[in-house]
Image 1 (cartoon, helix red, strand yellow):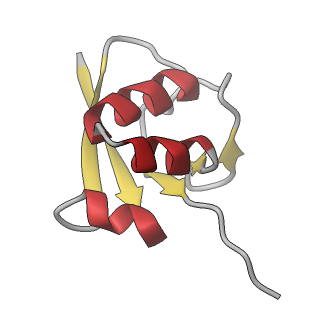
Image 2 (cartoon, one colour):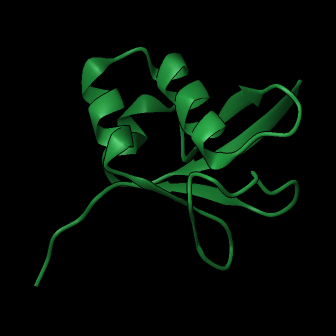
Image 3 (tube, one colour):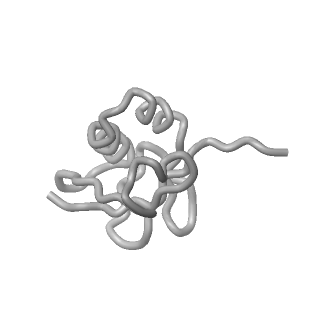
Length: 84
């Protein structure tokens, strides 16, 4: 099992005790696996709905659910935003 540090932004800040949260993953995992593990950890319908509409990103790009979770570098969960 490994622990992945995820940076929290926007509405997700209320679910951590700071700017990051640790999410436990078993072995090699995809972003979809990370999303599921994070949802279980949040244990909130509202947070799970927000998570479904959010994206995960590394230092360089937004990740697809089928991408492997990077083993190095920062990860972030990006809630949906609107603006003009």
